[in-house]
Amino acid sequence: MFCTACAAPNPAAASRCAACGAGLGGREGGGRTGGLERGAARRWWRAARVGPRRRLLRVLYLVPLLALFTTGAVGAGRYRADRADLAARYARAEAAAAVGDHATAAAAFADVGSYRDAEARHAAALAALAPYRATYLDGVEALAAGRYDGAIAALLPVARDLPGYEDAAALLAAARVGRAAELRRQADAAETRGDWLAAERALATLAAVEPDDAALAERLDGLRRAHAPLVFVRDRALYLVGPDGADERILVDQVPAAWPVWSPDRGRIAFVSVDFSDPAANTRLFVVNADGTGLTRLDDWVSYQTPPVWSPDGTRLAYVSFANWDGSQEFGTIGIRLVELASGRTTDLPTAGSRLAFSPSWSPTGDRLAFVTKDRRRGQSATAARGDISVVALATGQVTNLTRGRVPDAWRVDWSPTDDRLLVYTLFAESLYQPTDLGIHLLDARTGALSVVPTGGHDVRPPVWSPDGARFAYVEGDSTVHVRGRGRGEAWIAVESPLSGFLAWSPDGGSLLAVAADPKQASSIIPLAEAGDQVPLQIAYDAHSPYGPPQWSPINPGDPPTAPSVAGTALDPGTDGSPGEWMAGGSPPASPEFRPR
Image (cartoon, rainbow, N blue to C red; front, side):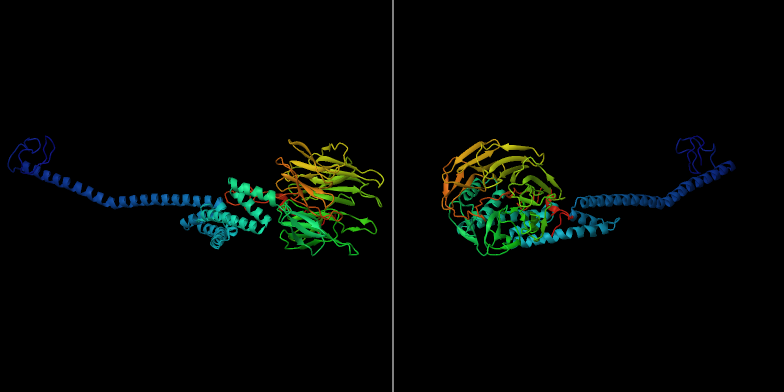
């Protein structure tokens, strides 16, 4: 029954409201009115009980739908998160591939499975990684076999390009340690058997790896002072001898030799060979290893009056060639020729129309050659003809006349081993009855600026640059050596014996060998780095044409071994990882005037 006071439901038999205590219906008993009220109350009660049940059923119907919608929303969120994660990992793989980290890229692309083109990119990364893998395995094998140079050469690109790949960096460090120990063993063994060149090369390489080892540096300096060998020719045979006159040994006697010159690394010797018993008097160009092995004939019809000159990288030789000259008819060209030692390929340089070119000299970078040109008329001596200094750019074959008539008596040119200064030696002799006029000039190869080196009216011989390009020296008069240098003042050194005019610098630039005019008399070693007495050196050499004067250091010394870089050895390439443009280009392009043979 419904309470009219508070609207609370009550049982039909109740007389008072259980909620508020009010009387229910005003009556007690089962009259008609009460019966109606009780029937209405029952109907109301049944309706009240049906409402929550329906609402409960509706809720029960909605729960699965809500669960389905919720699951779908969660799944969609997880899917989006998974795709975002795949995209992020793919981006990391792309970034690794972009910087050449093929190992990381391969692993990262494999990790993202079939997302986008990850499978193809994974295969590409593995292909890019394959050469490094093969090189790495070669390095591991070489290190295990004790071939340290091979291990370093193999592990070098792996450690440089893929620093985190396997244990390449640790293996490279182990190869460095092993190589240093091996270099010490090589130096000790070479000193024991008196192979001073091999000992010097081993110590110089080791000093580059261990630049702070003072004892090692002192050992190397001492070896160079006492034992760096000289090369010379006696009785047409090629010899080596120490600066103390000891350790003399013959290298070549199979062919007659003249004008020997060291390669930049002093590992080889080039020389010319003329056999005057040959009616044609053909002069040939040879090269031989410093131990006497590997004698190789490079070219014919070269000049026996001037030495060949090595390129600074030691791969080519420049020399005066008579191959295009007919001496009987005085027709053709005497010019400059290059030969590549690796291939034997020869190239005639353009001379801008000049029929006589000689005295080639390399620029420090090997990209240009300077030489003397002469405008010689038929029957005219070369010393009387007007000359100039020209430079050819090897990349293009373009020839530039630097002097343009300002040094008509040019006879020899020597390019500084370190910069663009050239020493020009002048010689004029119109006839046997006219005094010879000799002089020295300094020429700037970039600007063409020319200055005279004062000689005080004395006769002078051709000047020679020091290995570091800081000084040059020449013979003045009969028995004086004149040394000039930037910021070091000048020095005049008197020598007891009359001099030939040939000078040779020690490899470290600390001493000069002044060669006696008479090979029966002692030549003199002049210390310049420290005050000291001259040291006589008895060295019998061929003092008449074709000459065989002693040479102590290369004309263009090779660069010393460099300190190790991230790769860890002196075998590293240049700072940009590649040779200079002048090396990469090789010989100049062919043209009607400039044609490789």
